[in-house]
Length: 581
Image (cartoon, rainbow, N blue to C red; front, side, top):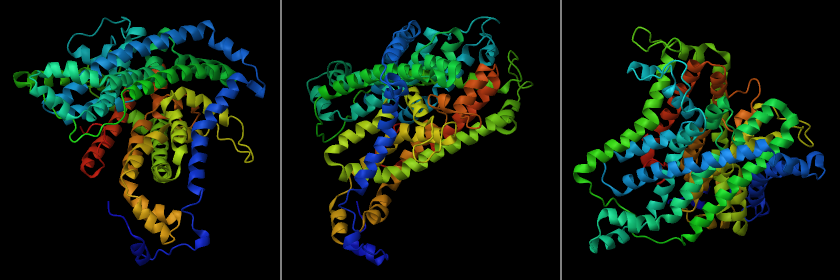
């Protein structure tokens, strides 16, 4: 990479700092990184531990233990393990098959297939649940058009345990696929060529060579889907709460909804239980990947080697059928529900109306405010994290030394653990006025913004840290010798190089934060509703058509951002966009 040399900086009018003011070798940036890591990663969870085991700042673990071992908590824990475990197996089967087919065969349309899979993952869990509920409801406009709608009064078959497992398996399958795509990139193609020279058939290579090599990544992908299922709130809330099938996140939500701040100690204890279960899954995943051995230098990554021949069209049709079942039909059902004037009315050209879209986008104050809030919260978090990621990436790569791994683990905590755990921690942290300042951000937009920044900081750092690792250090050393300050180095040398990666990371943060529900469901207050909260509230109030209009509008925003990113794909660092395989 070409970087600005000190002489070029002088020509641009940038004066070197006086020796007494030079900061490149100081502790300012490492201290800032440590402070942010502590604020976003450590303090919320330390406060959670204190609330659970030392309520009122007096050590009394009995209450937490009693809550964790209560009948409701035990049942919710069993339900959580059941739904997360079985859905992870389903996600592994679906996502693993899709990843292998896209990576090793010559099937056509790989990029649009991968784009569609990632779009499925970017859709919020509550939107996915609402879409499947609309598809299988007795008043389904889509099924009614073809005469397959269930009889009126028939219970929705997706409510309860089976529906949660099915929808979570489909929703987390792209997560498994992306994890396995990353593992497949590390397989040397020379291994495949050696097997081909021995006369091995493609199916034999996949079954006896590729899958054993990928075993650590397969285990890690399954555990990642399991952890995602542990913390999933949107799907169990829409499919489980109506029939009183509670998982740990929905039990916490019900406790806080019923008891308010008085239920915080119990919620803190349950949140620690969620964190413990998820933490065990994360630790097992890390152990699985470490057993896979160290990094292997490869001359050429894995290339497609399975020529499908006459089966090529059938494999492509099977993958598109999966996309249709996962994405197409549920979204069409949502669109049908949003375009009909009332539940049970057939969708025809004469009955088609856009009134519900006009209602939620233009007339209803709460939905209009929710769109504005979601744009504001997600956009602000994306911009702030994109700017912060440049200094963070430089600090982690160049200044932290042996502390880097510790800082990375602390930063990863809010992203790795379920969102409900972070939400409870933020409530406990900001319920009282801030020390010294005497200002409380509880029940304000700033608590949601803080939670978003804490949760998505690791996502914002991914691309800038990878880009920073490719910048040669001798340019910075030359700048130091010329007396350039740390601020000047970041502004005029590092920032221009990392800006594209930081911008992409910011947009990825916007994608996942825009219609997020797990965190905001517990942190919102009157006036700070987000799209996820409003969609959930509309569905609970029986306004399924309006909820469908909100969901479709949110999906349209996500699709537009992804298409914009894809259009810029050639100018972005490699492997940043997960669907560009």
